[in-house]
Image 1 (cartoon, rainbow, N blue to C red):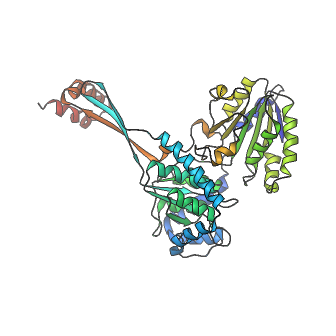
Image 2 (cartoon, helix red, strand yellow):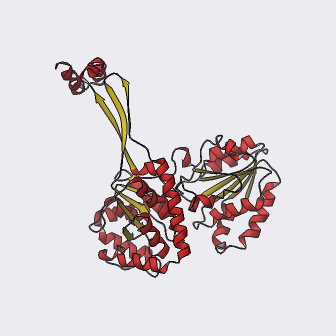
Image 3 (cartoon, rainbow, N blue to C red):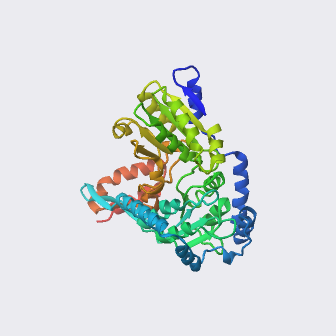
Length: 431
């Protein structure tokens, strides 16, 4: 754990290093580029080859797709309590998505002109569901569940199989509940490439959404342009802004919740104006980590990714939070909702001591697919808008167009585009 005191010299350099999280290593990007190219060029053969190499499964292309019998077996295998939890979370997520849905609109800004927008769902979307270190059942709901609420007709999923070749029952049940009927057992960079370029077995998608490891993130960067993507997300991170009213045991529990994700590159950061709080939180972290099953994973993060920052004021703490632009930001401070507006950038803001970050991971409603690595400065979390095509609407009457023909022609002359000007002018010549 690292302590940064804003009152000490050298703190600005330490903070800058914290803000500037490292990019994906070049060696990973190079390895991923080779994988993506092989899948683009060879299709199913490359997918099956990489499935055997990375996921230890020797399958034919016909065996890539999960069968209806597997969906049915998963539903029978899963206990009712788990099913109820999945259905509860899905209902919350889709209710929030429906509240986000935009409506087509028009208005007349000047006589004879009608402008507006309409929104139509994408036709085919691919959801990447990680399954390596943990089966992220909730990610199914936070991607496909929102796509279904947006009206996407074909929702496809890619997720790696377990070591024994089977699929996680809870993941399959969640997929069916969320509206997915087309699931392929594949993971990592080769899965992203297959969704983007398509193969003889796997039709290409319009957009790829969902989190993943550094290889998945690098692959999404490479295929962007061939397909749309939601964002390039890296290791998970949490920042807690706390004052003297905060409870150290809550802070420690929430920081540990992100440290257990699995890559070892996660970050958990406390920023406080209470000089005595870091020591209390550190003691709680040491106590509570003994209760966890993933201690080795947690220890890697505690060694390299946990920071305690002592700010000189709450205002400075909030400024640091905005510059760090965390994926998850908890405000454990008095009157948290009033201070949320002071945050310049964050993927999601959790307000008050009774709003732990895992509520957002699972049941709250907004998607947990959020920007990481400071990209909340220009990316936003996944929403229903990510599954819609927005088209502007424009309509002129003859008289309205005639009023603007001189300006249109002049712009065409300035840009040296004669045909553009003629397109408008010819209409002015007709009665």
